[in-house]
Image (cartoon, rainbow, N blue to C red; front, side):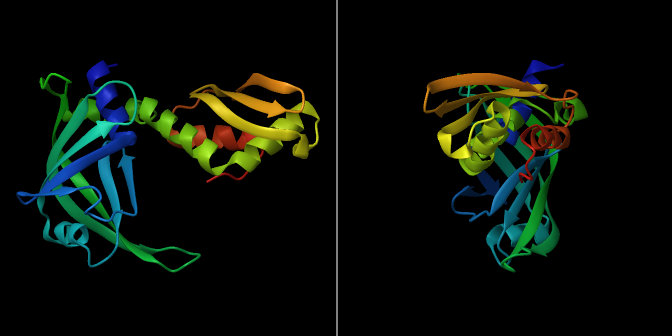
Length: 221
């Protein structure tokens, strides 16, 4: 597997920040008021409010240059060039908030090293389905579990240890992998750690979520 492409996809899957130039005008990610961002098989996907400049740019088919920095590891960045395309308008089922989904049809990819060296990456290598489950996806999902599913983690530990859930003071995933995850918890006796292995290794992000759900016996999002 191409390590350069793997690093670039990991950055796209879990960026810590970035900027985008739309038809020659630069914007920070904050200025675009995005409600969400995702890596869809190597294709950047944005969720934004309707009537917002990114939604308009998608409807116009604007040219874009997207630069993202990774959330972990080194200081590399990925630089993507392509065309924005409006895909659809959707609404939240619980609050009826509407958003537009805009995708970027990528035409060129480069990994920019710390010293400024830019390494071109063939598009078919960058979008290889084997890279869909990458270090960025693992890192993002681990953070999501720890930040949004603490109660489910405590309940899973309680079930595993046959202890009352109230005695589990805290629990967290310390390492998420394609074949399982390491977790730690604190109870009245002190700190502990263990590992859970999936029934079969995950090959896709969807497999990963399914494996975690089954291991935790919880309906996580």
